[in-house]
Image 1 (cartoon, helix red, strand yellow):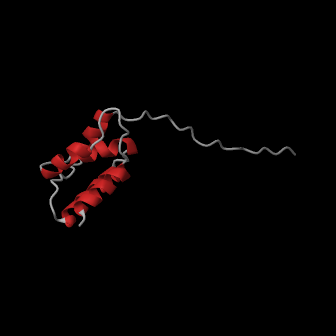
Image 2 (image 1 turned 180 degrees about the horizontal axis):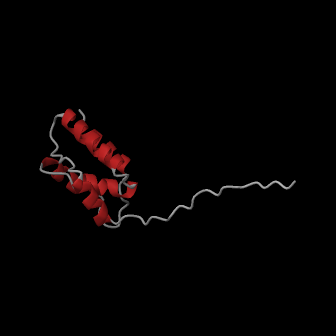
Image 3 (image 1 turned 120 degrees about the horizontal axis):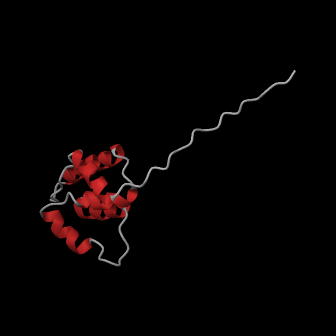
Length: 109
């Protein structure tokens, strides 16, 4: 008697192209991200950060877009803080964790 063993191959994964910056901005804006104005209340900062990170998780945001998307939500006082802090052309870009560390130092007492 001849027996056959059937080996099931794993499904082929289609290569999905990396989204463009414009696609990520559109996805992000559709989720109505909160603005952040800065200020002295650490709870306001903490709530903004929690909501932004939840949005990043929902949209499966690639790491390389997080800083630009988050800082796109800056208004008023925090824009003035961010101006001299943000990397200039030719400098290394900040990671999301580095930006959070800078903001923690600024907005937590």
